[in-house]
Picture 1 (cartoon, rainbow, N blue to C red):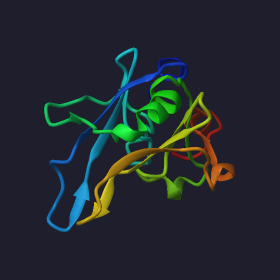
Picture 2: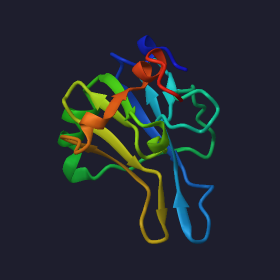
Picture 3: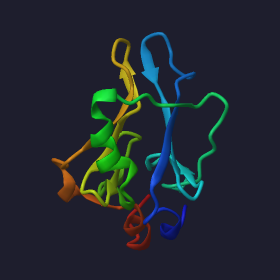
Length: 150
């Protein structure tokens, strides 16, 4: 598990994706978030390894994501210039999937991802101003220290 101090207070300097594991009827992208201290991580989820937030390794198959030109200022203000304040996961361990974790930013926005999708829908990363289910989320570090099952 990555320590809180290696993540909280740091900016995301790059978001990369690898879609080589997509199949005929399903698109999948392995998104990795690279921080300004060169720590790399994926969205937390319960993969039954017992580690909700392991360090990730960027491979040669990972490439930088493209961002819409007309939203550059929006992303600069709310994503690239913001620091991470927390990483949230569902309180219920049964609900922890790759696309259910969120990264909370100092700008007040949240990073969400859709890593898997049927053919015709591209996996993506986006930022939201609010979460509909925020009250059912807890800090990934709180889940470990409170004894919440991983």
